[in-house]
Image (tube, rainbow over all chains, first blue to last red):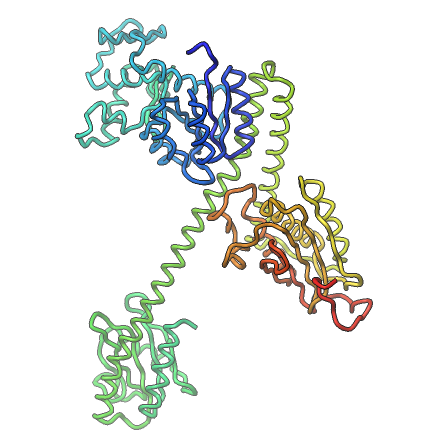
Length: 228
Length: 378
């Protein structure tokens, strides 16, 4: 992070939500700007060049995801606020370039974990930590080596790739489409079911309990994330 | 009466005159069913056996009854109404004298025309029903998304503010802590308003609310609403204006108070720039209670739809619940009163009215001043 405090822009039409999100970000040493609709958001983005954008999709004058293309040129971390029943909208926002989402209602711990993951992604865009080790699971990316409690779980190349992609996303969600495109390429017509089969096999090999996974987490209807 | 019935009625009347006979037209229901859709005026009743014969004609696609091969002894002649694609119904002609061969050919020609007319009307009705169903489906989906948004938003505010205080309480300055606490209060109040309305609406829908008929002084009701509303309205003043000597109403005091309060609350939310809201009550062929605001007024064509549940779901997104006015309409209807809304003629703004008919008044007006005075020229 830069020495100056990072700038955040909160785009939400609900005063109560802006208020508490602001309180959290201020406590985390962000400088905070607010906007309440698309029009005021466009002005604020142009004026302040934020490092982090908290984006509600349901704005009075349109869909918040309309702002994503404009935001991508300046490259702030984009965190979408969404409702659990807005699956297709949040998937569209993520595929358009948003970095992560939180589902309303949310507490500040979950919110800050997502903010950190989204910011981390932005700062580490070019490289990921080479070795991950939580004591049980060790992943050495350069050597393509995975160890579970010292044993090789014998991952297939695809299973390793899923693990690698989720790991370098640093706790951010990856949508089904993003994973499929990176695993099989854009031209292949692979369905989500096939992805699920690979994820299930991966979980059986690396999770302590395949029924309640803690490493490869499911975001229902959206995709997967690495449980840091 | 549906258009399909009107067409059947017209066909029956025409055939009755043309053949100097009784005539009935059955229209198709579903794939192969029949219902009596039109009869010529003053016609003899059809017996169950006659109806069974009509159904036989529909099933077989062949004439039956008087002069036909099947049931030749009957009083009626049943002829299928056949379009190019299907049978759209059956026409029944009842006359003591059998039809002559020329009349029979005329009847067949008529049946061809009638078949097409009836089928067109049938399709139009089916189309309309599909449209209504699609409308209800859309309504349901607007309702659900509105419901979840309205419940979730205040909950998000409350949980967020509380967890911010818990996790960062020591880091927040005094002003931030005060703001978060007032957020929790106002969002909880918002949730409370919403849940109350949802319960009212559910009870209304389930038929669980019975209106009492007590003698009610409208002035008392309005005074209470003025007091309640002024306690919550920011930057607004609510005034009561009750015509002296107004008769008592047979009404349910709690339902009436809530209905008037909902109208005022609606004005508070929708007429944001309006500083004053007036509740008037005056005599005009009964008692009219009107809530006047100085806001932007109603959108064109919104005068009746605005009382529908979640009517605001399509147009605006605001603090309202989309239920308040539907509850007003529900409560008013239970008390035998009518609701209406229109734009003001003297300035911009809207007027919402609850009108009690003459029959809902308990006593004559205490001072008979002859012509009832209208609210506007006082």
